[in-house]
Every structure is written in C-alpha cells, then in structure tokens.
Amino acid sequence: MPYEWLVGLRYTRAGKRSGRNRFISFISTISMLGIGLGVAALIIVLSVMNGFQKEVRDRMLSVVAHIEVFDPSGSAPAWKTTATEALRNPAVKGAAPYVDGQSMILHDETMRGVILRGVLPEEERKVSEVADKIKVGSWDDLRAGEFNIILGAALAEGLHVGVGDKVTLAAPEGQMTPAGVMPRLKAFRVVGIFEAGHYEYDSGMAFMQLDDAQKFFRLSAPTGIRLKVNDMLKAPQIALELSRSLSGDLLIRDWSQQNRNYFAAVKTEKTMMFIILTLIVAVAAFNLVSTLVMTVTDKQADIAIMRTLGASQWSITKIFMIQGGITGIVGTLGGVLLGVAVALNIDVIVPAIERMLGVAFLPRELYFVSSLPSDLRWPDVWQISVIAVSLAFVATLYPSWKASRVKPAEALRYE
Image (cartoon, rainbow, N blue to C red; front, side, top):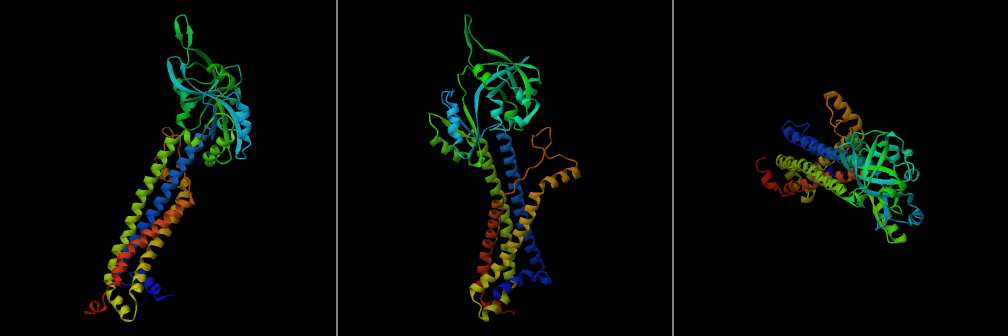
C-alpha cells in the first residue's frame, strides 16, 4: 500500500488513541454523522415522494385511460376502424369507445357539476379498472335503454343519494319551446357507487351506458376510443407512434397531458426538496474543512519531517484528501444503509411510531392515503451517493493544499 494511504488511514484513526486529538476526532465524527443523516434523509424523503406520486398516479389511471383518441367534432363514427388500427400496435393492449360530456346533476335541492362518461361495460374493463372500484352496487347494471348511472363516492355523498335513488341530469344544450329555450332534463337511477381514491374523480365523475349517453347528448356516435398500453410510462411515445399510423383527422392525448399541471407541480416539488436536502448534506460535508484544518495545524511537525524525508507536495495533498475522503465515504455508506433500510420498511416503522406516540400522521377521515407509501429507486440512491462523496472530496481540497504549502524549516523551528 502506498505510504500516503498508510498515513492517511493512521490520521483518520489517530484521534481515537491520542488524548490531545480527541476534539479533532469528535468534530470528524460529527461531520461523518452529518453526512450520513443528510444522505439518509434525502433517500427517505425522495422515496416517500415517489411513493405518493405512484399512489396518486395509479389511482388516477384506474379511471383515466392511458391514451385517448377522439374526433375534434365530438363524434367519431369510424371508431371501430380506429380501434382496429390502434390494436395493430403491439404496445396497445385494449381499446374501448367512450362518450364524454359535462352536465348538472340534481337531487332534491342539491346541484353539482359532473363529468359524464358513457361506456360499454364489458369493453371498459379492457382499458380501466373502474369496474373493480365499485363500492356499492354493480358495474354490470349499466344496461342500454335503462338509463342507469354510477356515481363517485364523494359525489353521491354530496347529493345524499344511494343505490336505487333517482337523480336528474340537465343536458348542456336546451330544447326550443314556445316559451323559449328550456333545459333538457332526464331522470337516471343510481345503480352503483365507485371510489377510485382520487378526490377529483370521486367528487365529479359519473358513468352511464354508451347508448344512453349518446341519446342524452344527442350524438350519433361515440366521442372516440380509450386505449390501454403495456407500459404506461411509455404512453407519450406510443401516442406519437399512433399519431403517425392512425387514419383520419384525429386528436390523441396521453394520461400525462390530461394531468400536466399536477405532474409538473410534483416534479417541481421533488426538485426543490432534492436541492434543499442536498444543501444539508453540503453543510455536513464542508464541516470536514474545519476538521482537516485543525488536523493540518496539529500535524505540522509530521508534515515537515515527511517533507525533509523527500515527500512531495502532491503526496502531502493526497494524505489529507484520503483522510477527508474516507470520512465522506464512510458517512455516505452509513447514510445509504440507513436510508434504504427505512425506505424499504417505512410501512412497518411509521405504524409502530404511531402506536407508540398515539397519533395518526395521515388520519383516514382527512386523507384518502392513510399510510405513507414508499417507492425506493436505485438511480436516486446512486445519484445521492455520488453527490455526497463528491462534496466531501471538494471539501478536502483547500486543507490539503494548505498542508502541502507547509514549510519544513518554519514548522520545525520550535520543535
């Protein structure tokens, strides 16, 4: 082993054996712990944020299709041809027609705005999981000509209705009468209540049979088709491929475009949290500067002797870079182990803390997500580790350079 490594390792451990260097050793240990805790905090926070994003995305996609293909006119009579062409793409798993429209829903004296979606119950199972989200009632009760409807849980609660009750829908376009334009009203029977776990959809969406929706909105054909793909993260790329292969004047949008503002906000929040927590790691890493400066001051005589024995300035620089680098690597490794362990077991750790303290961090009555989700991503772990170690090495540059500038004659004058 090169002597620079031997001396650097000895200086790293010296404070534990030498009484006069205990304070330096203490500062070095604090720096190491600071780096480790900062790295662990960064891994845990990013894992929890990834978990929340994944949880919300999965709940959103239980109602929203991966890709929607629709006609700008609002009616797509050739939807079967479009579905056949889309299914030729090997990445597309399923296709189903739909009708989309907005309406007002009334019950007694309560009125709410609602997004109505007309579907074919059996076909809809191929593109979404809404049929599995039925809380009360049956998805199969959406039969043509019976004018049945399935409401979101929060919407049904706001209207004070349950399965079997009647609600009234007001069409967006009225009808002309001798007395003027009058709203078109139609009574529907509630046959089910779904709960996707996403408030926006649970409070403002309702499903009905496709033919009934076409009659209600006075459409001659569905609005378009909804598609499910093999990998939802590749939906934007697949949508681009479909835009080149599908015939007709069609518009295509994927799930990320439908919720662009939400995902942009989450991305910005993750970036800011990463920067803030990285600054914490940086503060801990730059504590190494004070540790190494004190070590250099204490070891001036040793440095002078090594210089007189023929050690170069670069060798002296390497000794103190090795000392600081080892501290940074050990701190980072400890932080990674702690962060990964907590992130992988957060579903056990948080409930244990809640039971011990008698509190609930995410009360069920206030949040749809009642437990902290975690999604550990190894690229994040590697990125955090590289940044932490790099900051530690940067912090060693000035003290190491300062050590290499020690003049042997001046350092040994009073020895």
